[in-house]
Length: 105
Image (cartoon, rainbow, N blue to C red; front, top):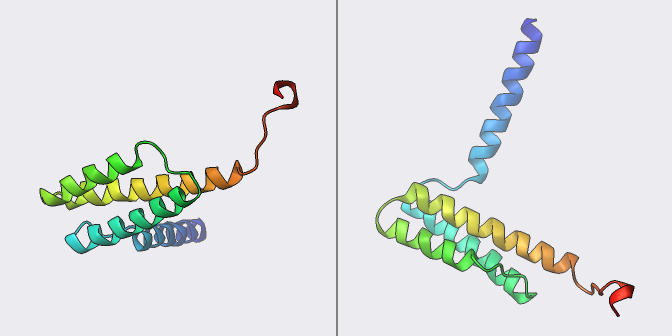
């Protein structure tokens, strides 16, 4: 029983440390890091025609939150914009060369 608890605690610790290592801190520098990553992802998505409609607006809201000193919200929004940029790129690449079904040609 103690071994199961020890193993569970070890995996939980690893999961928490991994999550913290990949999320920028809610500080001005953390926001700048998250913003730069988001802009890079959005630029990459746009380069293949995969930029999503609301991604730029989310990044603007992040900038407004950072300007008001709410870095926690700013980092969350910038990370969301980054994720949308990455997904937009993946979607565009997956749909590259897609054709309408034969019954629509």
